Length: 58
Image (cartoon, rainbow, N blue to C red; front, side, top):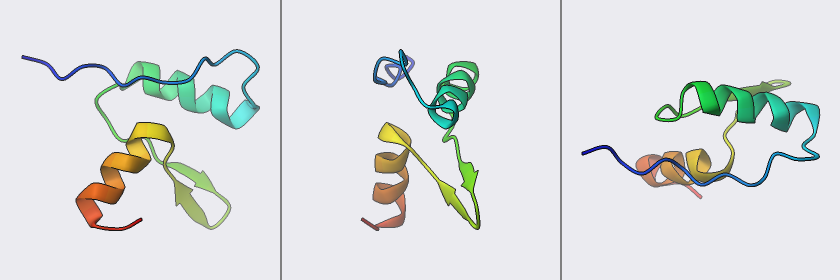
């Protein structure tokens, strides 16, 4: 049995970065999608929540 697909906000009017995120997440719905933002990597929405829980961070 597959896990339910993540619930994402409506991508209408998304910034360019968020549009890239939505596109990447649509291609890889079961993966955690990391985005490099300058010197850091960012996770968004449910990906951030899953990573925080796995790493025991906030």
